[in-house]
Amino acid sequence: MTSETETKLLELLNDFEKGSLYNNKNMSLPFLAGELNTNTKYLSYIINQHKSADFKTYINRLRIKYIIDKLINEEKYRQYKISILADECGFSSHSKFAAIFKAETNFSPSSYIKLLDSENHIDKNVHFQENN
Image (cartoon, rainbow, N blue to C red; front, side, top):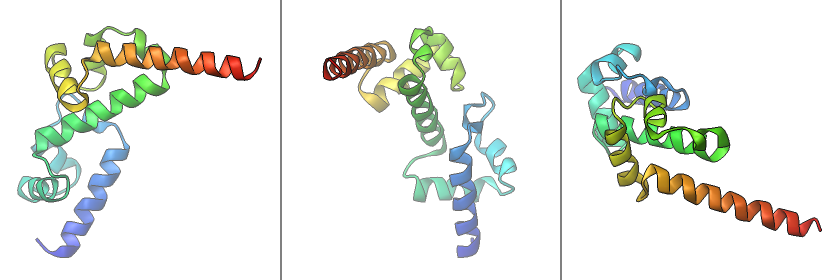
């Protein structure tokens, strides 16, 4: 692969990360290679070298990062069942989602949501006290 091809693929991968296509349940190395107009060998190499992960780990990290962002910034997500959260970010089972979530954050999804809710409660109290 030429350095130009490598640079172009990295740019395409960075654009891919800004979207949410990685939440597609059909996401696979061949699927993404087709979307980026490259071959699986090049794509796999780029992900391994520049993202320090294999394809599956790379996609799972993007999915967990996505759902964490939703949990932090959109409180309604904290009311959802774990299976709904799993589905929202492309996991086929809530047990797989929970295991990967815990591996990435050291928290189960429900513990993480409780932590966010308690921090949010504290933040609101602090804000309330500052204004009084």
